[in-house]
Image (tube, rainbow, N blue to C red; front, side, top):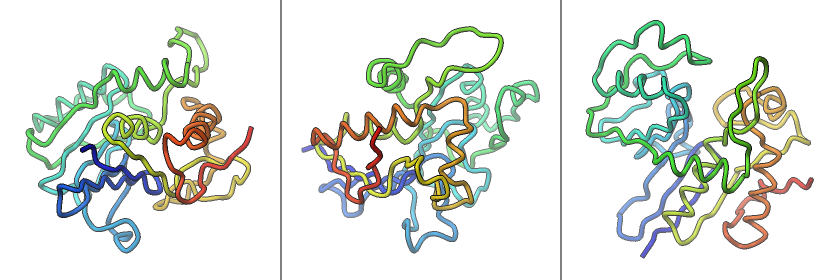
Length: 224
C-alpha cells in the first residue's frame, strides 16, 4: 500500500509510511534542524536539494541521511561527483554557480542519490507547460520549477495521499516570511529570474480544487 505524504511548510516534508515505526523526514535545500527542532523535528532522513541549496554546515548532515541531488545543469553533475568522491571542486566549476556551494558533504557514497530527471522534465514541460530553454543574449525564461513543486509532483508519484501544510506563495502579502529559517519575505520571489511562482500557484490551486492534494493549512489560497 502506498504511504501517505505530507509536505509541511516547505522546505520540510514528512513522509508517513504505515510500515515504519517513525515517519521519514525529508528536507528541501538548506532547511535546517539546528535551532528549529521544536517546530520541524530533530532528524533528517532525506535531504533533497540542488547544489546551491545544499547546507554549508556539516551539522545539518547525519550519517544515515540519504542525499537526493536535483540536477539542472551540466556542472551540477561535476559538483555531485566531487562530493561523492570527496574531491576538491575545481575553481572554474565554482564560477558557474550563482551562490556558494558546499565544498564537502560528510556522507558515504552509498548515501547519495540522483532524482530522476524525468520528474523535473515532466514538471516543467508537461505539467507547468513551460517553454523549452532558448539561447538569449540577455535575461532568462522563467521555466525552472521550484524544488517545492517538484517535491509535490514526486509525492504524487509515490503516494496515494498527499497533504500540504504551510506551503504556498502569497505574493499579495510581500512581508510574509518565505522560509522558517531566514529573513527572506515573499517579496523576494518578485525579483528572482528563474521561477514562475504565479504559474506554480495556479497549478497547486487546481490540485487542491480537484482533490489531488489536501491543503491542511490554507497556504495555497491565492486567486489570479
